[in-house]
Every structure is written in structure tokens, then in C-alpha cells.
Amino acid sequence: MKVAIIGAGFGGLACAYELAKNGVEVVVFEAEDKPGGLALGFKEKNWNWTLEYHYHHWFRSDNAALNLAQDIGHRVFFIRPKTSTYYNGKIYQIDSPFTLMRFNQLPLLDRVKTAFMLSYLKLSPFWRNLEGRTAYDFIVQTAGINSWNVLWGPLFIGKFGNYAKLISATWFWARIHKRSASLGYPEGGFLNFAYNLQKHMTQKYEVSINYKSKVIQIKKRERGLILETSDGSSYVFDKVVCTLPNAYFVKIVEGLPSSYVKKFTKSRSLGAINLVLRLNKSFLEDNTYWLNINDLSMPFLAIVQHTNFMDKKNYGNEHIVYIGNYLPDDHVYFNKSAEELIAEFLPHLKKINQGFSKSWIKKAYVFKAKFAQPIVSVNYSKFIPSFETPIAGVYLCNMQQVYPYDRGTNYAIELGIKVARLILKNGKKKN
Ligand SMILES: Cc1cc2nc3c(=O)[nH]c(=O)nc-3n(C[C@H](O)[C@H](O)[C@H](O)COP(=O)(O)OP(=O)(O)OC[C@H]3O[C@@H](n4cnc5c(N)ncnc54)[C@H](O)[C@@H]3O)c2cc1C
Image (cartoon, rainbow, N blue to C red; front, top):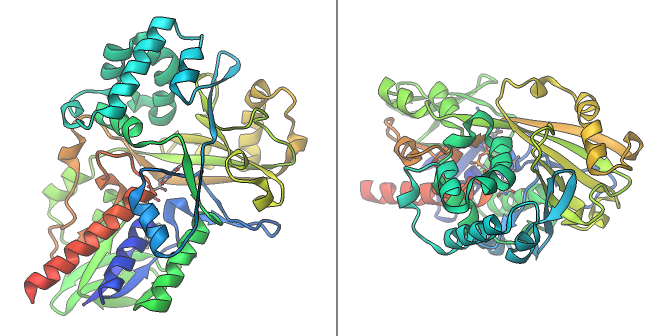
């Protein structure tokens, strides 16, 4: 059996690895020149480690990713960094029941109700009963409107914009239920991890990865599944796994029924933009790694100082800061350069750290992803396409199928492995 995988993100790589370990010949097609997909990274000459375009970490519960790292002998560091919230002109550490109870910007009764709500979500395994409810409704009813207005609303609005009040309570359950306070990071960065996985696959098994190879069409013919790339090449495979979002998938596959196309392209999503600053001074001087911006007058959702998580010695002693946003893919920021975004953000950054000035910035980059976050609205499960598609032999394995947990590299890996096992099972049935 010869299988093509479209996309060398973590879903595609995990699927390729699982198939290859079971004796299948695999060819991966990737439009970019490196593996990693949304967790893609880069490395400066004076750095020892790679850095992601968009901030990334793992949680203790990310078993699929951690097992994969163990399988290929890749070291993962776990530490408990500091998470804080910027509210009313001040930074408050809020990352434990104790620090939540100390957060005096929320009335005591609301803090207690919020703590109870969080404990319930942490302990309860029951998410199905939350499917039909919005997170807004759930939070207001259990923790109160103040808790929404001060703590949660700004984060939902920052992350989901106009969709904030439509997000399912299941999504919120998953965020709280599965996430750990201590966070993991692969040695050398996610790009290094992806390269290590690639090395494992290509040296030990029958896997090849074609970079700068954009797939533009998949057609079913008598001799097999024909895959065409933008450079005019065409290939024949027995099976094809596509890891692209639904909207791109339906564009490249010939012959999908219109009812399928209609149903699965309805689901909405947002893009992501990260301004990455290489600084010669620390921006979050209190050692906060993750700063939630609970101030809707600020034009960003979070400030993530990566080097308050992983040691700055891995990055030439520079301080690395992400300024992150989730936005619709037609937002004006998608047309702005790093310089333009710095000009826009500077007055706001100065409010958070009064001493901050442009002279701290050694270099800045802006990274943009037009498809970054599916909108997980109520009863989302009804709009998840199955792995098997109406075209026999063509499988779908993408971020929009991750549910009830929030999308992430761990779930991409889990899905990739599941699809590989399904292909193997279907292959056995045929024989
Ligand atoms: C801002 C941000 C922060 C995040 N933070 C975290 C985090 O902290 N931890 C975590 O685990 N996850 C995080 N994620 C999510 C995580 O990156 C994704 O869930 C995961 O990488 C998805 O993997 P995938 O393989 O499903 O898809 P992708 O990573 O999207 O892979 C798809 C691949 O297909 C390629 N491709 C596209 N079109 C074509 C084509 N026509 N032909 C060939 N190739 C093509 C793309 O270049 C890409 O490499 C974050 C994402 C964002 C945007």
C-alpha cells in the first residue's frame, strides 16, 4: 500500500510515522520548506534553539505528544511558569486557587463562585451535558456576571471576537479540565522536535517528505488516487490523507457531493497574528510567562514572554516576547508589517511597562496564519466530518475534527495516529 499525506504539520507527521512503522510506504507533501505546520519555527544564527512563529507549549495531559517524544527519545522539559492577568492598569498573578482568592478586583463572593466553577470543571468528566449550552451562559449562571465581565469575557472576546458569546461550554470545560499549571516544551523547540521525528521516519522507514510541494488536486481514477502538485507533477497512490482545513480540502478533492461540501464548510474559524520581539531587556519583569490582557481597549489578547518559560541562554541571552491576537482573516492587521504593528502597539505596551521603548527591540517579526482557530459553537459535534470521506480511499484528518478538547499539537498527533490505524484496519479487511 502506498499512502500520500498532505501536510507536514504534527497531524501529518504522526500519521506518516504510524503508517511507516506498520510497513506502509508513505510520501508526505508539504507546501512550506519545513515541517511543523502551525507549530512551525525558525532559528537565528546566535540561538541554540528554534522558536515557534506562534507561542507553543504542552500540558501534562498531552499524552499523545509526550508518548511520541518518548518514542523517538526527544527530551521534554516541564516547569511551572507564572501566568498573570493585566486588569485595570495592573498585573495580577492568577494561576492557582490561592492567587485567584487574592485577586481583589473581583468581589469575594464572585471569587468563591469562580473557584467552585473551576473545581467543578476540573473534576467533572461529563462534558456532553454542556454541548448545547454556551460558555457565556454557563459562566454567568455558575460564577456570576462579574466573573464574566472581569475574568472570562475579555479573554473570550480577545480570542473569538464577535463569536465570543456563541462558544460552547464544552470548549470551556475542555480548557479547564485538561490543562495543567506546569507546562512542557521539547528540547530545542517544536521545529527541532519535528526534524527529529522526520529523521526517525526517513532513516528507519519508507517515508519521504516533499517540501515546497503544494497539492492542488486529488482525483479518483481507475488506476488509483491521482495527486497533482502546483509544479505540474502528478502521482498515483492507494490512499490519501489530507490534513488541511475543511474549506481547503473540499477545494482540492474532485467529485465530493454538494451536500457534504455544504455541511462541512459552514464551520467558522479565525486567523492568528503574532508579533515577535527580540529584546535586549525583559518586558515582563515580574517573570510572568503568560499575561492575559483583560482590557478591551488594548489591541492584543496576550503577551507571552517565552524566555520567562525557557531559559534565555538558548536564545543568545535575548528576551523573546510574543504579542498575540486571534482575528478574522480579513482584519487590517493581516496587511500590516512588524514595524506598523509596533507603532500601533507601542503606547499600549508602555502602559504595561512604563520603561519600555523601541530601543529595547533588537529585531521584530510578524507571523500570520489565516486559519488558526475553529469556532467551537454549541452542538459542534454535529458538524465534524468523519475521517473517511465520500471519496473511497481519501481520508480527512484536521484541526476541525478535534473535539471536545481544544485543538493543539497533541490532538493533531492523536488524530494522525487514529487515521493511520483506521487505514491499516481497512487495509486488513480488504485482504
Ligand atoms: C497562535 C497559536 C498558538 C498555539 N498554541 C499551541 C500550544 O501552545 N500548544 C499546542 O500544542 N498547540 C498550539 N497551537 C495549535 C497547533 O499549532 C495546531 O493545533 C497543530 O499544529 C495543528 O496541526 P495539524 O497537523 O492538524 O495542522 P497544520 O499544523 O495546520 O498542518 C497543515 C500543514 O499542511 C500544509 N499545507 C497547507 N496547504 C497545503 C497544500 N495544498 N499542499 C501541501 N501542504 C499544504 C501547511 O503548510 C501545514 O504545514 C497553536 C496554534 C496557534 C495558531
